[in-house]
Image 1 (cartoon, rainbow, N blue to C red):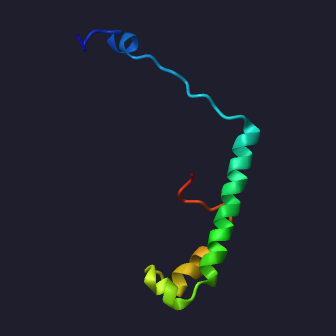
Image 2: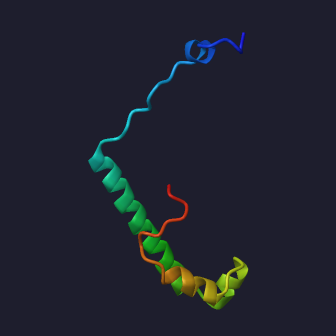
Amino acid sequence: MKGQIGFVATSYRFHKAPVAPLWKRILKRALRWHELARQRRELASMSDEALKDIGLSRADIQQEVERPFWMDYIRR
């Protein structure tokens, strides 16, 4: 009976996911920033023909390269 008070609380059990230690989260974030910087340098070194193949312009790449290393829109 879904309308009864307490149905949800007794039907589902909530488990907290274990949280990684702080040092692991910091290390993971630093490694991600390092990878972002490497990818941006690699994009900047690509030829115009290679950029055209992947559908990017030199202006797109310049905009990406100028971003600070910590700007990560994917947040892995």
